[in-house]
Image (tube, rainbow, N blue to C red; front, side, top):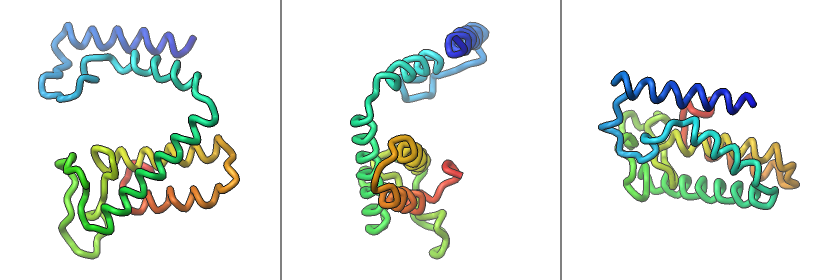
Length: 151
């Protein structure tokens, strides 16, 4: 019920902003900018209710794989293997960890850090036997993304 109220208010707020010309999406490159986030929130809720334990484990394994890609990027010394992000740079002071953030398979280091945080939640929810192994992998992911997102 609360999700429905939030969705209705968010959608109405979005359309009021569009009609009053206070929201401008002309410079956005994402197709998601055309949809109010409330609609996507409802879709996410419906999808999340249908997920099973095995699917969440696969999601945790995929997050660990992306962290591995981030470690490879960190070891090679490039912010992204795919050159997808403009805001990632290796440079500045040599000793500063903040200037060596990697993106993994994500568009930037903030998204990878958010996935690492989500991985911690998955570990707690799934009650995995090798909990400390996965926590170690997630901590390595936090190290190579060195970002304020997970703080």
